Image (cartoon, rainbow over all chains, first blue to last red; front, top):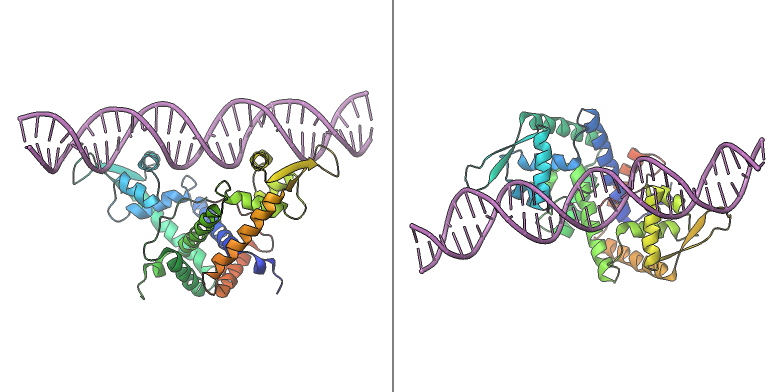
Length: 150
Length: 150
DNA sequence: GTAGTGAGTAAAGCGGGTTGACTCACCTGT
DNA sequence: ACAGGTGAGTCAACCCGCTTTACTCACTAC
């Protein structure tokens, strides 16, 4: 017990493995809930758009990718019925990308799954506090985009 | 302070962001130390081979990729002078991939950087314990391969 | 010997991004 | 009024790292 190999494993690997396991479990449950056509990056898109939408260039900045890549993701989500491109209220060539009701339903399901998952892990309040401290000490005030990392 | 936005952030995102930040800092320091030609997966290869080498098929299993992908990685590291293919002592078509002195030097540098990085983060013993608990509860005894996730 | 097994390799394909070039709507200065 | 600049969007080409498919070859078992 005291010689658990994890005790001598680098912190970096512990973080990576923890993230990989939690994310894998989340993706599996979301997929089982009928969303096998969505990748984690699509969840990030939904989060970014859920308040009042955004242009795809704004979305690109949030996701930390080029605007072309963001455009491709929006194309795909539009084909699948999760977003629509509307004329932008401020005009120009801008288009406002907004979520459809299907996307809002997905957000509810994904949120529920995330909370169930977190609850099944026991008391994670200490872990949350420690991670928060770690993130603040490395990133300072401004949090970077969580790049698609899978 | 009590309304830190991170307090209401999903645990999954906290893990991902922590991992991304720590890994990014590690990669930046390793790169600055003269190893800009190496990706994290190469570090995983070095770890897997450092004791007594392995065949590329064994390496593939460790990394969680196909044997062709492992072969390509070995090709690249061989070109860069970090590994050699030797005849395998047990014969067959097997080849034993072993590290060159350059790779061992890299392992020393990377190890030192990891420990400096961890030390600069203050007391991470609680974080380590919590992560260990999380990983055990999701993965059980057998730890999965840490897939290249960047 | 002949058939099977398993390591290694060659080639093509693919997913998800980037780079570069372009169009078009709207400023802005003169 | 209109010439030039600016920024959003999009098309096309490319690239990287991995997978899939198909094969060659060394050895083993019958």
